[in-house]
Image 1 (cartoon, rainbow, N blue to C red):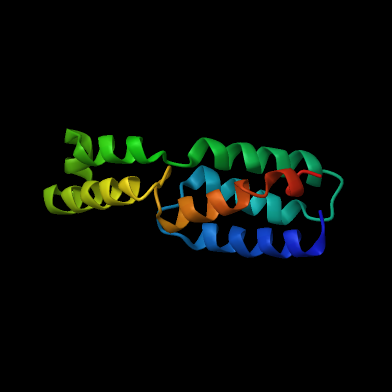
Image 2 (tube, helix red, strand yellow; image 1 turned 180 degrees about the horizontal axis):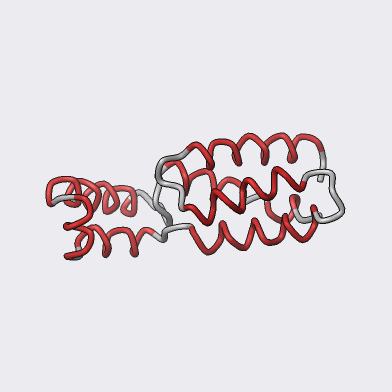
Length: 119
């Protein structure tokens, strides 16, 4: 991968790791990728990292459904769950396909460049 894409991916990976909404699996995959840079395992770990990010991104419909569910209300409390659902509906109406939390935004940014990253 070229230097600009590499630097971008490292930066977004650090954002992802720092996001409070990032899953433990995505954090582990991100850290594994950082640790593998320059090693013989870098290519396979990069593929695993991209696969994990694609699995972890929250589609906007799923976010709305979860926030409006009994589990979402129990997890967030009714006021926050309502705010999350309202926000998700708003960004969906503006064309969003995925949750816009920091973890998902970082993951989407990386995945959008996956063809260049996986070269």
